[in-house]
Image 1 (tube, rainbow, N blue to C red):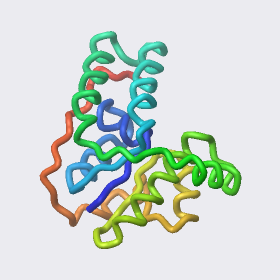
Image 2: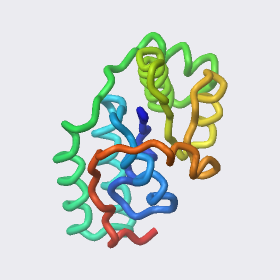
Image 3: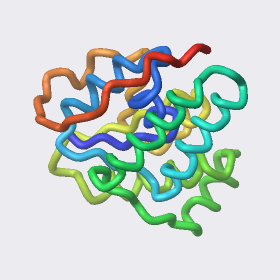
Length: 164
């Protein structure tokens, strides 16, 4: 199984949020994890936002930040396709980074037709746009769908000090 993670899903690999268990299960079964090159900065920014809001301690922030930086080489990051993202943003009225993730995922799907490929996000508008573009979407409504696939991909346990 090939899995594309947008930032909302990627964060769930590091913070114990709603549906983190699903993302861990999917990532654990994936042979390859893809994401956009912008996701690293977006993920650390999400950790920083949770720190500012008091949902993460300084220690939990540092643990999460170091974990994603350590894991980053194990993700296959996809370059930004600016023209495709701009077209998707206009046609599907997406936010900028959502359009970037969707354009990257479409590129991954186009290259990986031989293996089951899934898009994971916890943004309803982005998921609808992905479905409109013909992508197989994993979200909380499709919890068990790809669990038949096996893999040895290793991911960090989420930080349990997270307090929403």
